[in-house]
Image 1 (tube, rainbow, N blue to C red):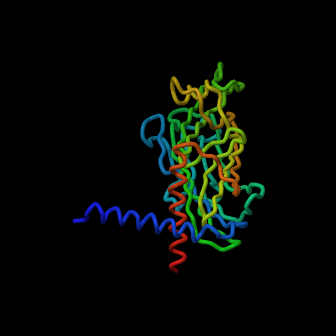
Image 2: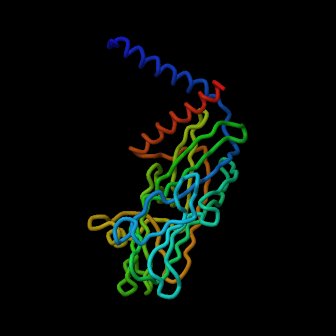
Image 3: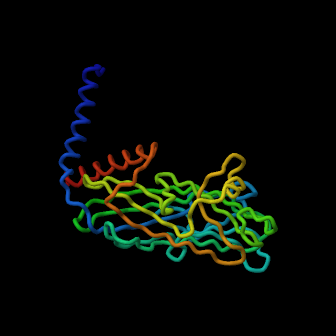
Length: 279
């Protein structure tokens, strides 16, 4: 049986090891160029009929094990409605980007908003996995994941419109992203990472995403919910939203409990560095 003294000694040993790794990596050269790979898919979804009834997932992203395209409803002449993420490449995208450079375009979110009858989408969870690695200088892989909890409302196409849009009324998507802080000043999602002893901010911007009117929040989320962010889509057309990615060496000031997520990513970064040093 371990004694209290031995347990304390073990904890001190772990703390000392982490401190040593952090100290060893503190002088690491900052990364100026990165490689990245994005894999996205809808890891769960539900419709207004309950469960997944009436919602079809397709274009499977093998890396995520989830579809990148959801379709629903009975067509009234222009096809079903659908929502996709990077459907042209099954939710996969890769490339390079420079620290503190302009954002680079990645996948697109597309809502084909058609007039339908029957079951509609009600909610979905979009998992966005971002793999990063240093190119200049070369460094180990780091995985950062964003979980998009999406609430959707297929609005009646009659006045008064919920979001003040002209008839036919815009449909409403509300986002709640786990693992990132939303900055309303520039409508970006921000996630701090610790990589080889240096802090960076991974910034994701989706065109059209911003704070929604309180009436839209209440319509989608229920009474008492007057603050939310997301986007709306015009009826009878394809609505395209471009996602872009940037990395800054100025960390985002994440309020609690976001700092807990930063701590987890920091320990992951130290672990990746430790594995590389052993190799």
